[in-house]
Every structure is written in C-alpha cells, then in structure tokens.
Length: 264
Image 1: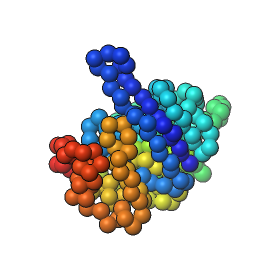
Image 2 (image 1 turned 180 degrees about the horizontal axis):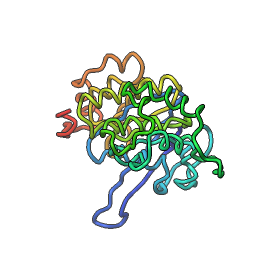
Image 3 (image 1 turned 180 degrees about the vertical axis):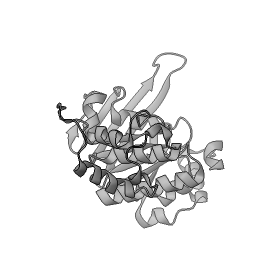
Image 4 (image 1 turned 135 degrees about the vertical axis):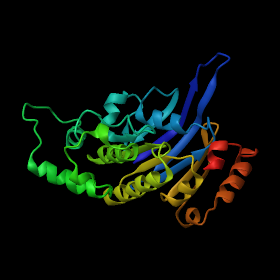
C-alpha cells in the first residue's frame, strides 16, 4: 500500500545550517499495516510524513501509494489518497461550524460540489453511527458548534473526519501529544477501533514508547533520517521500553538521550 524507495531530503543544502533529514530511507507497508514510529528529536519522523504527503519535493527516491507513483505529484493531488491528523487539536476542524457540517465537508472531500449541498437524514444517521465509536457522546450533539468542544473531543472528531472516506494511508503525527493522559487514551482506543474496523494502513508517530509498543502491529525506530530498527508481530508484543533503549544504543552506537520520550 505504501513504498518509500531510497528517499533523501536535505534542508538548506550547502549552508552552515545544512540538515540531512532523510538519508536513504526505505519503507514498505502492506495493506492493513499499523506502524508506530519512534526516534529522538531530528530523527526524521515528521519529515517522513511530510514527504509522503507531498508538503515539499524530495531530493531523491520514489514514493508509491497503492502502486501509484506519487513522487512528482503536488500535496493537493496526493490528498485524495491520504488522511492526516496533526498534533494540534484545533487545526483539523472548523470551530464556527457544527459537528455535522464538519463531517459533511470531510465526507464530500474530492467530490463535485453542487447547489444541493444540504445534509439529509440518511447522512445524519450515518454520522451518528460513525461518532458512536468515539464513545464521547458526540452522536447526540450533531448541531453543536465544534468550537465548544474540548481539545480531546475535537481531536477525536478530526480523526473520524480523516477516515470517513477510507484513505489509502492514514498519517498520525503525534495526534495525542497535546492531550491529557486520560483523553489521549480514549483517542488511541478510537484510533485502534477505526483502523481495525476499516482495515486501514496507518503510520503513527509518537514520543511515548509504551504507546508505540501497545498499538499497531509493527514498530520502527528512526535515527538520522533512516530506520535503525524494525519489528512486528509477536516479537513487537513482547517488547519493553528497556528493550527499545537497548536497541537504539546498539543500532546507533550512542546512548538514547531524549528527555521528552524518557519522561513519557
């Protein structure tokens, strides 16, 4: 479903601020893979997601989504293949619009717009059913303004909106990092349910090593723009945080020193 072949990206080349963000990155995801991604600051995690999304062109390499070479496609043209949820709960929804209006916009993304744009009862029932999976009671608040929701509720709604049209690849860029632990756990539970129900292919960046182990069927660790550890299945389920620290030291030749991840 997703293939990255020898992806390279350097920012500010030829200057004192030159940074090799992706350094020959190779990654292949099967349909239905749910991959968690960890690594220190500057490891290339978000740069990888931006490369997949087409935020800027890569210097070298190829990106294929479901067999389609999208390397030269713009961010706008790739959007129909992707769903994405960012760290900030406020960025994925329109605060002045109602819940059902936000969901209607997401459901009609990429479709031809007509004058007949009202939300009918069949759509409302569909949205209610979709919202139930979040376990936040939002199915009974379809006409509530999104700006009145909590950060966690808005992030959960954003997640649901990003998956309404079943994207080929779902990109989760630290989508629970700005939430309190209890709310983050609820959003992660909803994430698991949606990915499993719709058999989505997903990549989730996290700074929480326990979450990286507990969620998904595969885990990759990045360092200096490349993957230094890749584990899946039963082997992944048996991991402990201490194992990840040890693997980082073995693969990178240095001690793991990322306060944010250690505190998590």
